[in-house]
Amino acid sequence: MLKNRLDTQSIEALLDKRETERVEFKRARNALPDNLWETYSAFCNTDGGHIVLGVVEADDNTCRIEGVTDPHRLITDFWNTANNGEKVSYSIFFNHYVYTVDISGKTVVVIEVPRAPREVKPVYIGEDVFRGAFRRNGEGDYHCTREAVESMIRDKSPQTVDYRIIDDMIVSELDAETVRRYRTRFNQLKEGHSWQYLPDDEFLTKIGAARLDEKRVVRPTLAGLLCFGDFVQIAGHLPTYFLDYRERVGGEGRWNDRVYSGDGYWSGNIYDFYFRIYYRITSEVKTPFSIGEDGMTRVEETPVHKAIRELVANALIHADYNGCRGIVIERHGGELSFSNPGTFRISKEVAIAGGTSDCRNSLVFNIFSLVNIGERSGMGLSNLFELWRRNGIEKPKLVESFEPERITLHVDGSILLQKGDNKLEGNAEGDNKGGDNRAEVEDKVEDKVEDKVDNKSEVDNKIDNITSGGDNKQGGNRTEVEDKVEDKSERRSLKDLPASCRQVLGAISRDGTLTHPALAAKLGLSQAGIAKAIAILIKERYIIRQGSRKTGHWEVLP
Image (cartoon, rainbow, N blue to C red; front, side, top):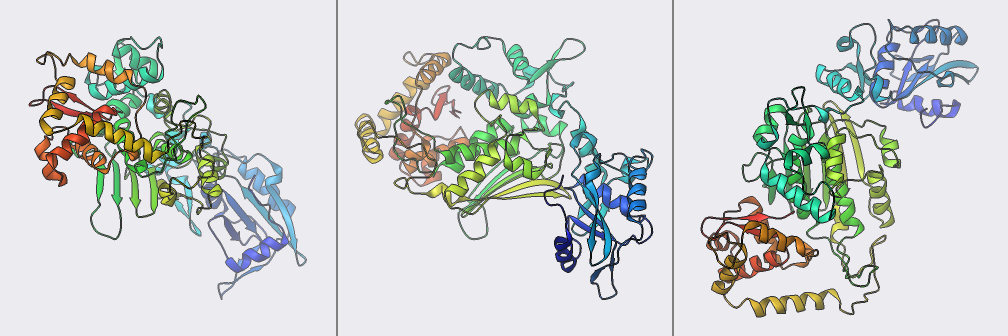
């Protein structure tokens, strides 16, 4: 049922506004108007609305109550037609959705049309779904495009589209580095799990990234392709696929930072995109020094970190990858926006209220949640709105549009820059049992790093010893390096590192082949400064060297 049942006062107030996206007036003195069913279809396929019968638009464009002569017969005629499957594909079921209201001695009939469940969309009139489906746009009804109808048909299926097998690929064609990074994170989070030692094809099948086809060949699912494929492979099956992050500090003009799926510097899949974007957005979030409940572990995440994690994850998990314009995430000054193709599978109000989850890509959801990305309870949006409310920040603006189908969330980003010494409402504050504040901890770490890093050659030697392959007697092989990395369960938050570290990490994430001199020239830093930043990033497990110093490359760790 719609949120507000119309009464005399509300109808009179609406007369001044005339028709809106969710209210339609129609003259129906003696019979149901022919175009009633177009509006019915449009409200069902959009966000619901009220149809008021017995209102006429005068020559001066004002609306006035005319009333209906026989409301009982009109209501009977409505139900007879609504329940005729040859006329309308779906009928609202409850009598209390249709009722009369008396206004100044005249009677109008109100029909409440709810947003139709996705399982019955598109609601259409006649026998041709592509000609008989309508949607609401402003004050009018319009024919749905073929793409919109196909999108609603896809959403009807009880099995989400990402279950589809990619029948012209095998799992070994997926991006091996992304699979390895995912498995490393999985093993760190689920130590001792029975899937930990499975071969890749079996592991990917377990998490939903692969399935057996009819010939018993293990092939990627669409979810596996999205999470572990490369851009060329993904775009070959989803021609409109595109991921785009844009960041501009102030003013107009060029973006200060941009990451997009087709730039050729990285895989272009949604799993890698998540980490590249999350760390960029949260790099300036202040984390007050806090000790966890165990009295030993520093708390690295605030509720803001968790909210941003959900925002990025939701855009990727709930997108319609057959839709147009791709996923666009922007940071412009103090505002963040997250926009993805597709509409809500539940109403916007239910999504914000929380507790109900209806995921468009359930296998992608599963793959992400297994490594602690994504909220399974359906409370992501609800928690976001509550966090912003408790901190006195402007409520996020959630917009659902239908031509083309998109969901866009605009967020006041000022919460990202709140000072660390201000207690953020809802933040995980500890008692500082360790006795040091954040600045003192940073100073101690920096002193230790400076003691160990005296000059470039010393750093380079240490890097070679740690990261080179079998040609370095002290280096060990890649597995040994990974073991050392995985043994260290904690690392400092990126925002707690020197600015030079963030600059170097950003450059390496775009091009892992950059040398010390190239980084120095690109970033305007000294080679000694580059060496120091790299040493810190290695120590804190943000990067690792694959191969030798001369022929290898840097890899950004998840």
